[in-house]
Image 1 (cartoon, one colour):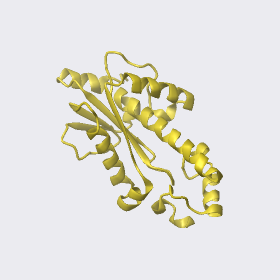
Image 2 (cartoon, helix red, strand yellow):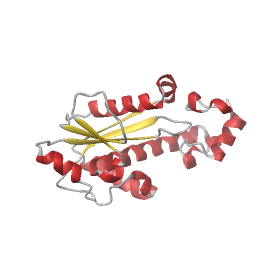
Image 3 (cartoon, one colour):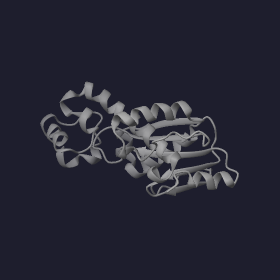
Image 4 (cartoon, rainbow, N blue to C red):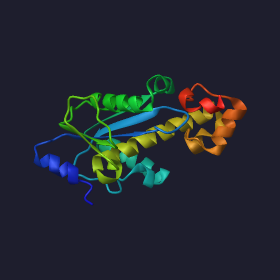
Length: 198
């Protein structure tokens, strides 16, 4: 599978700035959902860009630096737990993706999103299931979003050390759930995700 297949088709149709968008953090019990939008140069490909979940933390960190250095334009947005609780996670993710795209310094000609998301934007778009593994642009966005969120959760680990955020990044592991039951919820927990332990 050519990871530039979608980008090449769009380039052939005259699209110059093709944006990939992805999110990370839809499932965790704590922390924000984070979305990245990136426009990558297609004549200077970074080797190793893939679905961020398939890469080691060290590899992701190195690739993320390179992606953000080389990007024609990028923007990373987050939506906090309080707003996730108000809106629900699907709507919060869509809003986060929309803000990531609309905050780019260069307006894309076309937007490729991961999954099955239709965004409320005026730019032509296509969503691709498993797009982070199939499209170079979405893969780059997935790495940027994942590294940003992981680093954020590492910071929260120093504020709330008893919860183990550095290890599980807010996902509902046994260790995390036990910590919630022992210590209660923090301000970064999603109330709508943790009702059974409140």
